[in-house]
Length: 418
Image: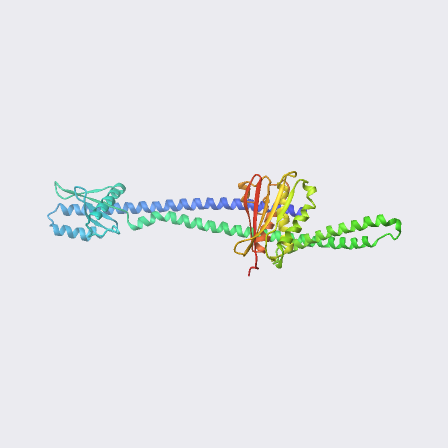
């Protein structure tokens, strides 16, 4: 069994190593792909901007030629309307005082809107165009000139957003991949733990059956002579104690056998179940620390659907952790049961005055294999969470923790989940 657990621990370490390598690989791949996307998109944007600038230069040259020829004003307007207007990028033409004269392709600014608010908006747009792309001078005659400014096309604007969209898509796929890998790993770990639990139950079954038989044999071998009364009393006491321990082993085997199966839930008294668990540990407190006090306050709660075997196991793990966390001389552990206001859930509070749980550890305490102890497999709270949440439809969480006070809250539904 120990060898199997060592193999299981090695398997867990192997999973952790593979998970780290996969994460590094994914992050590296995202960085490379993102860098390539950004570089390629910037190259396209730069090429399109160069083409746009060349096109603007041609427009300016054409307009300049028309303005310096004997072309009439109506013909000049025709050139503007038929050539400049055909441009797909935003254009603003300013007069000598940098006041807007013509504008096209500005989206929400209508070409016929000449209100003061629009003119103010155009000045702001013109300043941004001049800062981004400069301005081209249009010489009307020897004494008059205008300015032509332009902005990026819609295609260029959309391309500028593409790297962020592409990176977002890649990151989304990466997250989906990591979540999928985590789910696969957890599923495999779950199957491993279930298999180990079933195997443990099977391995325990044979020696327990044998021990029961030997106890019967030992109990039947009584000395009939009166002088053997003291010896018979010792045998009876020994057999009785052995039966208690074997019954305990049988319960442990049954618990392991239930892991991975859908347990039966029957209406039962939670307060009585907790009393049994508390009494079980009270009898053993002298071995853990004579100064430890353990108290339970019962609330008025109805019988609720429980699997007493598994739930007893869960609370034994919680109390065992609490006993190990408190001082053997001054430790105190309190349990409280209450019915929540909506009558749909029962709340169980487990509080101890131990050393507390750090914030870093609090995020990991329910993970399989995590432990802060020198000895242990880090499965106690994992089993608690599985029994409470997966099997009973409840919830378990660390409510608060600091040196001198740690509080766990558990909730269980008052009616069976359908």
